[in-house]
Image 1 (spheres, helix red, strand yellow):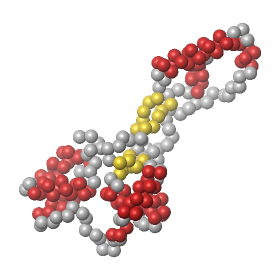
Image 2 (cartoon, rainbow, N blue to C red; image 1 turned 135 degrees about the vertical axis):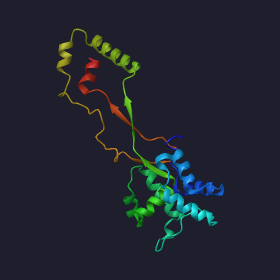
Image 3 (cartoon, rainbow, N blue to C red; image 1 turned 120 degrees about the vertical axis):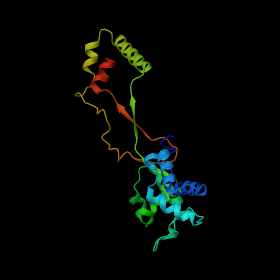
Image 4 (cartoon, rainbow, N blue to C red; image 1 turned 90 degrees about the vertical axis):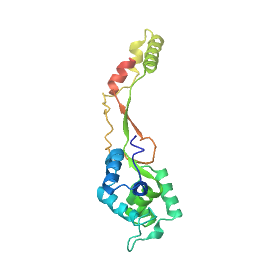
Length: 208
């Protein structure tokens, strides 16, 4: 099972537990089955045991009961729509930034994003960016055309070219893994981050 498909929401976890309870499995058996499939994203044994006991007592709903003092009205269609707009406008937006805008708690924002929008934050994956054979051939041909155009006036032309000192381009993006994390819907591919493989001086050497 892929990493995307093994990440279930809390409600989906409870639905799985409810299904196994109906089949007559014990909490220990349910937990072992879920760990074998979901691995690290599986719920804890204490959580499985708690919900299995509830479903054995004929509980029907997979929704969590409202806690004392909890503002149930925060999870409204309007708030979900507003949060979705914030997230789609900036995939790297922080929970506290949305919370400040909507004047609700960070925990409630997280609940709406994870439980109702079914989104999670993942970091970018590295993708090497190398010159293709076509790119190399094009650079070679461009350099050759330039030399033919210059002809015997190479010294005069070079005197008119403005150059700078050698500058090294980092082989990695200094952005941390935490900083690169973006909100994505379940099943979406992680964002890509490209590596630069050569220094500026070496790229110029490729041309000339």
